Length: 574
Image 1 (cartoon, one colour):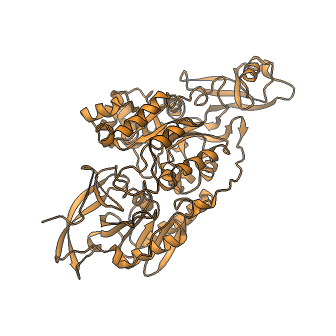
Image 2 (cartoon, rainbow, N blue to C red):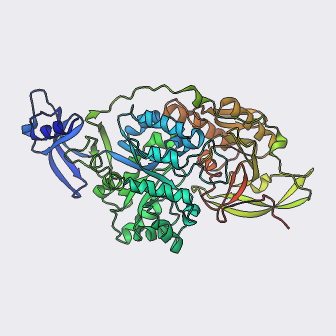
Image 3 (cartoon, rainbow, N blue to C red):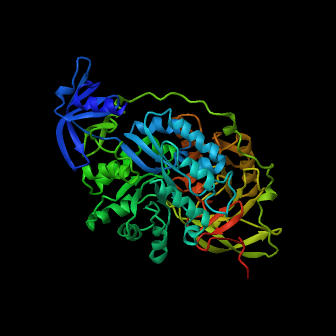
């Protein structure tokens, strides 16, 4: 819609397409509820309140009979890839739950396919009815402690910063490089700020003078606070805080009651999911966070504001979305109940539940796993001693952080053995991008597996193949089946017993979320029978290779002591 046409629509010279009558309007600008009508013209809001002069003979009037209407919800930071479906399939599902805007950081695709993967995502956004805002991945790879499928440098990132739909630089995970004054990182940040775009942060555990230095770079947000006190320190220093409630990392139950108790202003807090698995996405998206916030003591209008206008203001798109305001897109949620946030209908750019067309993808996205056939011996850690002391990754259920422990393990024929009785499994990460031939080896505790093995090609951020098991034979079976499938999740117990195929870049399905969820539920059921006790084992496993989240992780290059930011030997020296 041309600017002149928008002005004429507001004046009534161009009549409204649709008028929603008798609305209880949730006004996130003034934090009040007002009664009135909403006039919509060419997908934009042309009038609010008394809009009779905007009505024409062809205007469609819909009486909402005093139903509450609020702005469409916006996810402030997320990786759609974690839902194991394409962006189109993600939007189809999330839109049903009131999501009319998402801020994506496509660094999962970027770590596999590089710049052409980002271009593919940007092309797909043009097909979609909702607003997809993009932050360009800042750290591909996340660090030099892993092998990714691609690298994004200053030139590539700078070009993308000039692209439509791009609102900023994605989470700056490599905080040691920032604090050390790495020239390329600082230049990338400077280029972003010069273009009046935001730079999102990622700094778990950072505080004091190191946090001062990090913030001095112009980084303005964070979603990785491990404790409430950490989040509050960052907020007091001027950071926008994303309250994250995803499938692997959650903070609402802990943080919100304390924010309410302490009377902290919530203007600089907004919601993000970061990562959402298919089972959780089927249940809901941003509506789940709004309901949770209300149940934890936040006023409904404030909770809605944190999922709409607060997010839009941070990314400087509030002139377009985030509120029911004149000239903004008509992205609206019609509610049956405000307090319980029950959704009746969703309006996107003036259209009720718009249809999403199918998109075709290039062939190259379905051929991304390259490594030799794996034999059990490839996965064995050798040592001459009968007893060794090994660094063990210790899973923290429901968290993406891990602990580091040192455990005594036995060897058999010079091979260090997992100890199923003490829940210590073998773990391996295979470089899958055809570049290094690396295989990182170690041990992990927390799965509870009593037999067999599991493997997957979803492994943040480089998405190498990660395997964990009670024995090396089953781990090898998983690895070879994954290559055959060109990506997915595999379970093995003497043979491959089940799998989920994810051939799009080795991490996504082109099927719909419901079908992927059904298949995933079968895998969850089978892995539980194998002894696994984690609620979301595949999501949890995907973060064991992320070398920027404390404390001990594993990549294709080996065990990573994240606190020291270096590779360490899996067997501790005497």
